[in-house]
Image (cartoon, rainbow, N blue to C red; front, side, top):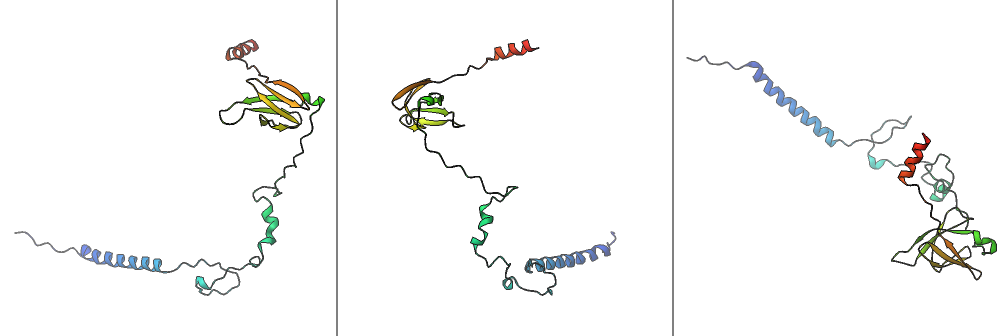
Amino acid sequence: MPVPSRPRPARSLATPLLAVAAALLALVIWHLAATPIDTSPIVAGEPQTSRTPTELTLTTPLDGKSASTFSEVVRRPLFTSSRRPAPQEPPRQPDPPAGEDAAVDVRVVGVAKLSAGPPRALLRFSSEPVGRWVAVGETVNGWLLRSVGERDVVVEAHGQQRRLTLQVVRRATEAERDGKTQKAR
């Protein structure tokens, strides 16, 4: 005959304790979720009172001033170390008239003949550090671009026409570079 098993006291005690712990944990979570979070700043010397967020007003001495008061701050770049205004581009000078000495003033740096739009030439003037793209019929620095060929352009100033040829710089081939490297050794 089997022996009747006795209930274990540890098992019978653990189940109600786990149920009570789960209920308490659920109560704590509900309380934390239902309570609003107070994010108001703590001011030194002010007595701690509980205020609702609707009672708070954000005021600083600058809130009452108009935006025009801060024009100097707005005008200066914010993220530069010197906080100086951005440099202004100098006003563009009017195109000087081309003269006889201006024949060496201009040279062709590139040409472009695209299907859309007129042919253009990249002209570089000695008075400017960067070249300018000029379309046929446009005038720049007193020079009128008359025509654009495969490797040359025709410009005109004061009734005189000049043909400017595109100067192509020959690059060394890979074999020549290898030969120069071997000779240098």
